Length: 491
Ligand code: AMP
Ligand code: ZN
Image (cartoon, rainbow, N blue to C red; front, side):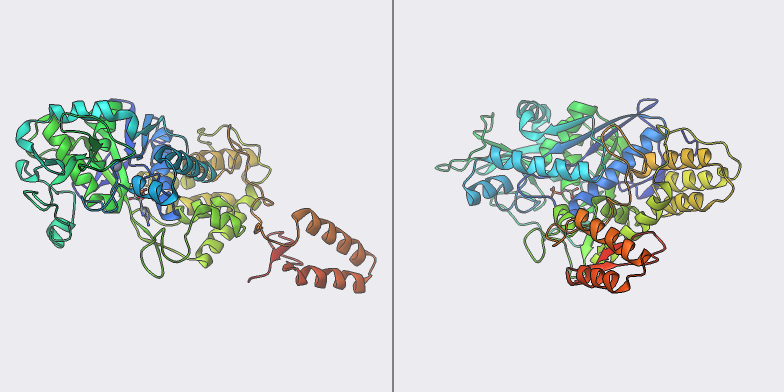
């Protein structure tokens, strides 16, 4: 356990703040989860790598962590405000499948990415459609003055609370014009709490409510699951930076009204003490999207032969509040960096972690690591501390092993085996596209034959084996300093 006080950036107050738990010794965190109408792209997964590093850091600091990540299977419209269709209804209609099948399929795909990125399972995955009764009860507890009913549903009147949109920058910087208006709304930023099923329409997902048959609004579900599972105020609410504009201000408005707080003179009145947002992963061409260009799913990276933890490494190399540009060259560089680390740690017999080794030469490095993580989760600096430790000379392997295990508890790079995952090794990090012509075993056999030929000074055979491999896209790397004997030729 590290003693440096943890400071985190609170988007609500726009300040770095010392983490002071609501319940002594505990940390309660809510993370806005995926909308399961499609596969997550790697940008979405950056949000969960960030939340995972936060959770790991809190555990490592000795707090008893309760982390909730929700699964949005209803209510998220094609526009984050109130325009468009429900994303799941739309996907189900397009694929002629039931919403439940769609939700199950994409939830499982998301979980596969979570596992591949070594993101720890939260205490609970809360599924929105399991909380409909709680949502209805929650809305019934909101004083009527905040709500009004129109043909399309029950709406929240944002002018009835002070400080609406404090979290957002868009309201002050860009104005509210971008929020499409719905017929009958009192203010452009008012949002649906309950969307009624239009007369004559059939929805796959609809429930009876005091406001007619329909479905909950997306913002409502996060307010309710956060409140029900963690209690108001809980410690930290996380999400991607886009949520700072609409989704989280609306959650806060509901929470304030539900609790009877007119204004936000204290952050805790928002429902959470801290609101934290990761910046975006972007493509050179602009915003990452699931519909245009190459759909950057984690599976695509894996199919091209990259180990998924190379992407985790790429995320850790940037501070979570900085924009990060994705490029294949960047991923390659992250992979090489990870390989250099694994080259040194492979074969370490790691302890379970958490023990801070006491070797005097390791201390300053661990202090640097602690200070970096305590400084708003500065993983780029923390990674350099890990590398400095691995470069130390004349430090017994025991201390080094303990130091790596200690740091990897936070970084989550699988440098030591865990209950659910094997230790990373060099072979696993080899680039190996799924459509490669050669299997790894075949390459190894060819290389062994080549070695024998060279030993026998039969250079004709050894060259022909090398040429044969090259023709199949495998480049032999004699004398590679990392000990990588071959790589796939760049395409
Ligand atoms: P969604 O499934 O669309 O609700 O998004 C899941 C999470 O990913 C949310 O926290 C978003 O804010 C976040 N997110 C969306 N796009 C990106 C991106 N390009 N980079 C980082 N986070 C993102
Ligand atoms: Zn949410």
